[in-house]
Image (tube, rainbow, N blue to C red; front, side, top):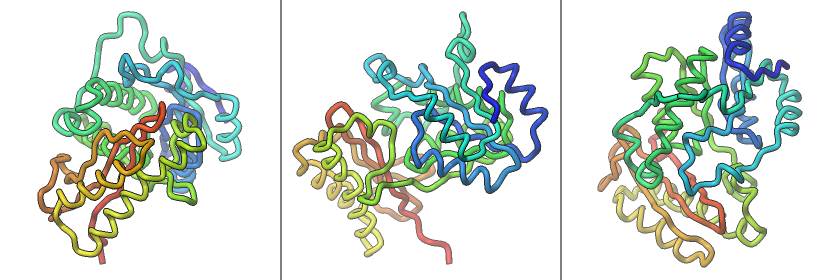
Length: 281
């Protein structure tokens, strides 16, 4: 496994790599969700690049970049076990050198949900992903379904800018009790972690109602609100039942949709979602 820290090294390595080439972008502090992306990439491509970069441009001024969990030594050991070909772990000054002033914005879907509450977030995500796609030039790139809005943004970015990579969605990996894996779960105390199960319980309930025939979007949103608000340690940020094309809230769920929510528990802000999509026969 090669550990590369400069753009020049990565460009040289990509030119020498067999094709198809897969990319798994991460911010490190890896867990089984990240490793599921790696395993999928290993199955479908001839060589795999994993990037580890805590991207400063996607954090707001009051967010947790300084305390975001990091453990490079452990991350590298896990990736070595997965037989990853290349780890690209540039320092901030390599990705954003002095005088950097170019950013990428995806309009429309970034103005809702996470984008409404974190105005600069998706500009930072789109910028760093565009840079990674340009530097690595992967044939396939792998993203988790847990960050559902981010997945939609990245797909729109790749399509609109002709970045020539297939964006592959990998299902959310959960603990046995349903909690979606997230690096920010490390912030939770034992009691807070128990309270955090309200996210997956609310989403399971909505999915059950939808599969049972409920198509009233507001009824589904209200079910999530009620369940979260009944948890004393949970502070609700938003609930959503929106279409997957433009993330517009639905009065009637009559097209492919995503139920999602964001909840603060202690110092952790957690997000989760489930797709509401009819299974193809």
